[in-house]
Length: 182
Image (cartoon, helix red, strand yellow):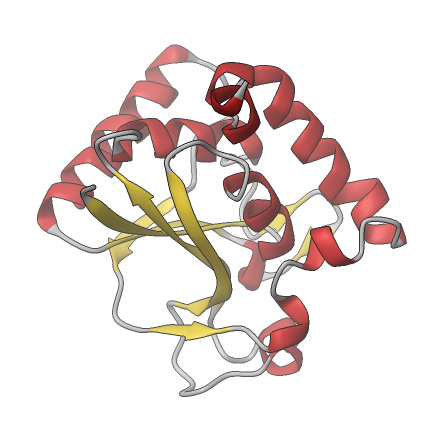
């Protein structure tokens, strides 16, 4: 196994975590905060918008089963990278689209995949996803871990998270962990 780590933000971290946990090749997903100025931010502070952090997920994956470029293609399919500082009704810099790279190779791949997605015209607007090196990742509080799995019937999960997970399952059926087990 060749383990690699990706850090991605594309709206609420509950949505990204729920999707990436089902992606074959992914061994671990953790919600957290990155790309801000305040040390050890809290959910409340990040949601207030004054810390500069984005809600992100860290994803550990086996790059022999899932390469970084394909992980990014899934990322671009499950959120709208053309809306600045928002995803749907979630508005603020904490919901911005961002790829935080862990190496020069990831940076080059992120820029190439972003160009590929832009050139393909998948999204009608200009892609506004930020790409920058990760400086520090802060793990979110315990109540945010496995949020969708533990709270599937909450209003937010029903209206926002569940449709994103359903879209992912439909579009990437061949990449689901459960499809590999069958």
